[in-house]
Length: 92
Image (cartoon, rainbow, N blue to C red):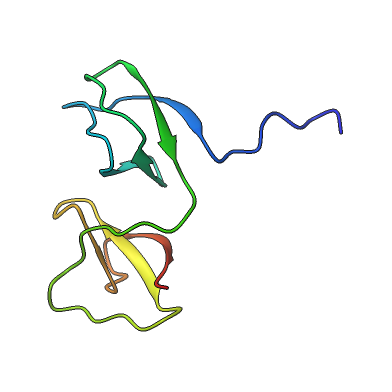
């Protein structure tokens, strides 16, 4: 296939304002990734966009299996609230 670039399990990205910390989730545009390693702002880092991760969630939310999850970029946590947040996956 001539247009294939890479599998996409690991993405080379540029760390946003404040840098990134290994194991922490970051919203890069509409893409939620977990930083594979720490990096300073503007430095390259590897983001993991797929897989199953334990991430912070809104304390009052109790999503069941398969529930849609959204990223609250202000609180830096997952939520079941769609309004004002970016859809990023589903609970397992």
